[in-house]
Length: 357
Image: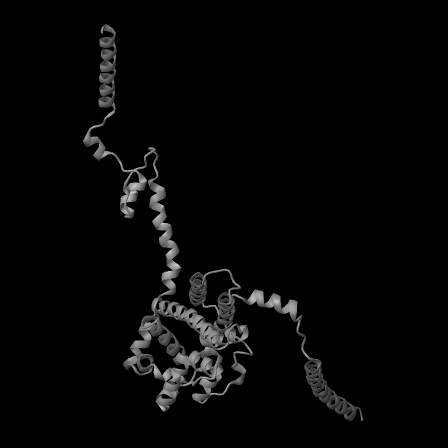
């Protein structure tokens, strides 16, 4: 019996020690509620995830705060590619085109003599890309007239630029900061037109590279490519100003853009379309603003063009006929000079002979 009581006492003491150990290890309810939640128990709210401190005591605040900023920067090209062109960017395109038309020689006289011809010329400057690309794809070239809102907006700009009292509208937007803003917005529309032209050509001729390049080029620089026809409407015929003979900078950079977007559309250029649109537009805007500020007409591609022309086509020498004609003309002038100088000498000799006689 004594042994049994001894064993029971040991068991009771063991149970008491266990109870005290449990009480010592147990935390109060308030401390449990204030304790931070483990990462897997947090909700899906980004603010809740960033507000909870890490369980290992390290500071990870800067990394979590920089992640949303990086994501926002990556979204900028995508949001930029979704910008609507109507009405602000289209309005800037119309203003830049009509103002450039007014600055051409004889355009003001045509507006006074024939407003209809001046209006039609302005519409060709504003919608020349649509007209030329439609002709290339066998579509009606007058389809742009179906866009009544755009036609009214472009016509309003044309009227204010040419017929505003005291030319106040033109003088206002000829102010350099506003002119730079309008030119930059016009270059944005150029990118959108090239992309639309490439996609439209691919819908008619799938995987036809040359067709996509040609239509994208025509859609983006149509007003420059049909400049001879536009001048003919105003009664001016200058075939030497053909863009194919001597390309201007906008026509060249549009051709380069058409090639780039065609390669991207065919998945031969490893870059997303919105990223390419963003980078190409930045290049257009920066180069255009720089050329306007420096008043430079030289193309930024001039060194590359000269190097490629020397590499593939060699040095162009003038034909020998021109040299022969120049030599004959120079010889002819020297002969005339010699004969004219010899005539007084002969007269002097004759007078001296008479005196001696």
